[in-house]
Length: 146
Image (cartoon, rainbow, N blue to C red; front, top):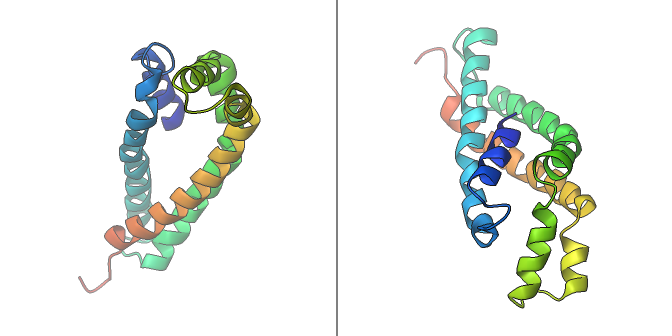
């Protein structure tokens, strides 16, 4: 849900159209709400399932579960993004990268397509999710004697 809301926000401010050149920079700010989702989920898990006490491993495993859900849902989210919310986004990226000389037409079409974005989304969400889980688990762990 957070990803779809973010994508809608990006489209609303023109990052999928007239301001597509800013997309690669601005989209990185999604890390803030993504980390917040993990943080609040781990804090909730600690409170509700572990009576306020949670080890790093328990927190990390909770984050791994969240990551796996995100990875499994990624193809659906990418499809909704590129077929319903912003169907011209990939075409706009192809135009921008070819007009600015960053890629030729064939390279751009090979890179900016739904299949590749699904693959990149799966790999990216897996690695970033595991890294986020490891770090957030450090900050949400709590021993019983604290």
